[in-house]
Image (cartoon, one colour):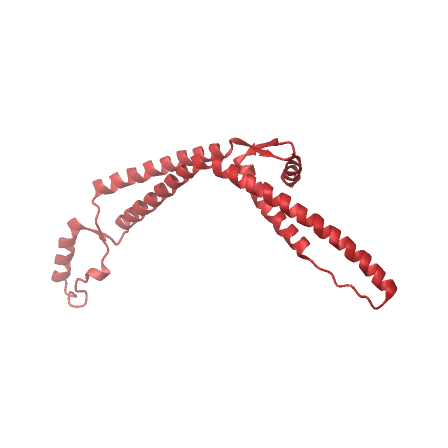
Amino acid sequence: MAESLYFTTSINRFFKLQERLKQEIALKNQAFRGGANISLRNPVASQLNLARFLELRDEGTAALEAYKLASSTYLKIRQAIGAASATTSGMLAELDLLKAQETLLSAVIQTALDSAALSLDDLDAYKQDLLQSKESSANAFNPNTVVISLLDKPRREALQAEVERLRLQSFALQEKVAEANQARVSVAVTEAESKLLHRLIGQG
């Protein structure tokens, strides 16, 4: 039985290795599925083609073994990421919620700040002005063409404070996620898997 070693790196680096292993698997999959056509009509050509066919067979066999190695390594990396990401997954869900709330409240505030928006307090005066205007028949009050702000100044300021609180909370949480992803994680691997990972990690 192959001796188990431990490969240690950060969660962020494990994510990169996972993508490189997927590429490695795809390449080896294509390599060992390849076939070859040989000619049996010309004895000399046939002998050369047969020799090349045997080479291709050996290359295909090696590619299949490399595919199995990359696949087993990929599984271990995915399992390591899954175990290590249990903490960050909850933080990421919370971060999505904070951003959604911030976006919604910001949109409400933006509508309230629209220069064309009328506050509820000004609505009666606006309607009265239209009725008293000489052009009231051409500019009759039409609720579909008037933007109404549902926020008075105190409520708007309270929402702005809430948006700022959500933004600061999001920044703090992003820092925690980034810090968690820098944590180093160890995974048990065989010597062959360790060599593969070190080769892939050396790609940058």
